[in-house]
Amino acid sequence: MAENAFIARCSSCGAKNRIPASRRGEKAVCGRCKAPLHLFAAFPERAIDVDERSFGQEVINFPGPVAVLYWAPWCGHCRRMLPVFEELAVQNAGSIKFVKIELDKNPYLASQYQVQSVPTTLLFREGRLINRFVGGLGKDQLEYNLRAVR
Image (cartoon, rainbow, N blue to C red):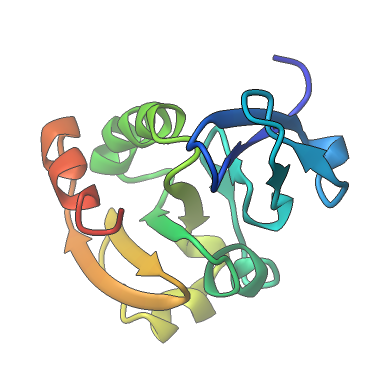
């Protein structure tokens, strides 16, 4: 897909609606029931990169659940976990937002959330940290832990 898109779940019928990123902030209606969609809560359909400037907007101010992966390019466990994290982002589009933070480029965010090793996964709901997992998790483990944030 050439253009980034977001998934907006309809609050009336629960249908997932794919919205091009260029239309975020516009008025839209559900393709199934024609109810208005609230695009401020649109979920990306892939994991997005976040830094210290965008963290507040993308994680803290986001009204839905967010899974945050702290990683580093030199970390072997991170390199194995990233494709799993990306796959889960696609599978959970419309219900959980997935973001990645490169540890070495964002030391303030690492210290703010006491991230001392990578990979570390933090789960947020409505801007509050609700859980953390340290170490490389397999797909089954990550899926199981994500159930708490839904």
